[in-house]
Length: 232
Image 1 (cartoon, rainbow, N blue to C red):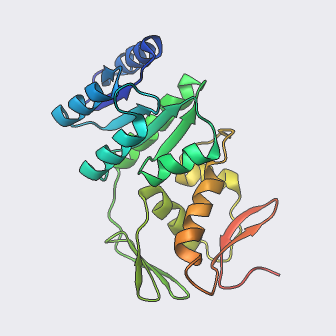
Image 2 (cartoon, helix red, strand yellow):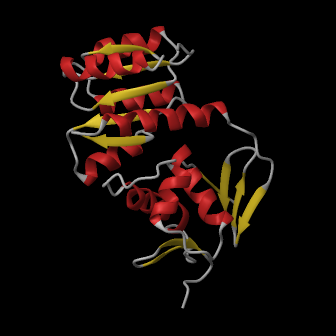
Image 3 (cartoon, rainbow, N blue to C red):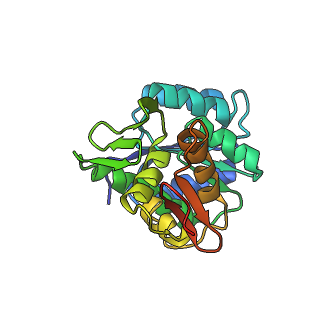
């Protein structure tokens, strides 16, 4: 059954790229494969993609450079990095450049396709919210998707914003990592990565580090919460 979604696969391993393309085609998606960075760049400029799968180690132009370029041209298209590089700094670099998700090879195809569906479903049901969430001197405008603290605008990625909204809507409540994974990443299973820790670190650097009062707290062994003071 065909749909209107088009997916770009930038993967320098021909066999892997072909397998992903064939499976996506079976699921009704239109999928293009680029085996190097220059071809991926050309395809991106030729078509409107619903999701982009980016390997980091691409010939001619690597995936991180492409991620930065694609994000500058399109602030909304979901970008999932596929890479054999599992170091924390590689993840940080990818997220800093605008990646929405990160999968380390070898990965399960079912998990990859589940994540693709999550991003497509989220794009479909992008309902506009009009309320504001206020915690201490932090204000989240759900209509304009902006965050302000003590009069200072704070720029967040879409995933950082979603995580902050979840924590602030549950002010004072400790949210387990599994619940965060389900509600922010729409995944009901443990990916075996430290993605949540990475994003909490991003938020703390932006939301808390420049200010005296810290709002984002950890309850070791339980999860994370937002509050003007740590739970005793």
